[in-house]
Length: 482
Image (cartoon, rainbow, N blue to C red; front, side, top):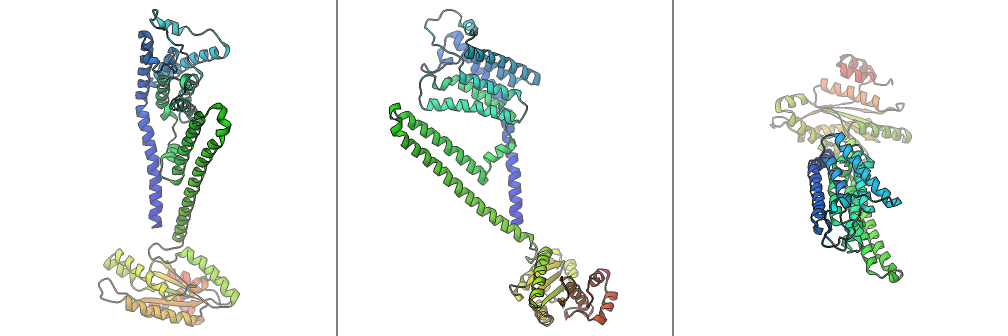
């Protein structure tokens, strides 16, 4: 059902947001472990220098190593994340930024190098050590992590800084996957691991639950986003791999192949997006149609509701005045419906109303309308119909009720009192006709029920207004003067 579907969609959105918040809290619960792991790796790297164990700071001979300054700065950043006070976190981070600024000045203006490595050298080593330094990639990754720690929670700049750190680490990992030489992307495996651990320790600080929900939810946009990201990463990785397989002198000859591969990946992503958007648009249109039907339909009987009745009546009155055709209304009230509710329960009363809702449309044309007017009252709007035709149809409906509907225990038939009226030539709305049909319905109730009555004549109108109860009298007050 449309209401149930809407509720399920709303509940699913809330559940997805709560799931994203739970993921962030789990990452936040693990941040101290990530920081402690980074501390362990840093101490292992420094121990490698002290004990001359190259495997701890230089696992690959042809790649880069972890400089002692890198380990010290990473230790300061890890200590910042382990600190339980904001002041200590800021102090450790600022100290790390100071060391990084000193190294940046050394790289840019050739300032005298830091003596830290000479302090850690200790005695003369048996084997010469290959040159190791804190490079540009390491400097940018650690600076980005420092900025993420200093910025306040859940800021766009903080998330951008973390994305920068993860991006640099991803670049190094891609370089390793290509088996590049010359420092393999500018960071050693140990330094890359340290940077990843520190970035994960800061992730919960700036991760937005709504953004995470958009990435992880089961919606069409989320699935399309995940697919686009996967295709983009695979496409660029394949293109780079093909480029590396060619000799630089053959790049011009191999360019068409590389361009073709990238275009195929882009076309696949575009076609996938178009297909998903088309499916989403179709689903949106189905939901919109269901909501439109819901807005003009009575949920219990399936007939038109009051709002739909008002819209239909305004168009029907305009057509009747324009074309000079008749327009009639029939107001139906189930006799002694309150006794049905009191004796058999409201569930039985609802079943009876649903049965009436199934019977009434069978007597109408496609140009007519059956609506639930309120409670146990139903309204029929009959286009191109005069009063005599409305009376004849009302009598057939009354007999149908008497023949087909019975009380839940089968002890007696269900009857209805019906009032009829037609639109007068000078009337511009259907309100007066409905008021006359309401007065006729009251006459049918007073006349013994289970009958059809025409609208009261002018002489009997005042009697109907005087004898009617207050809510009927208010309806009679709306009758237009002849």
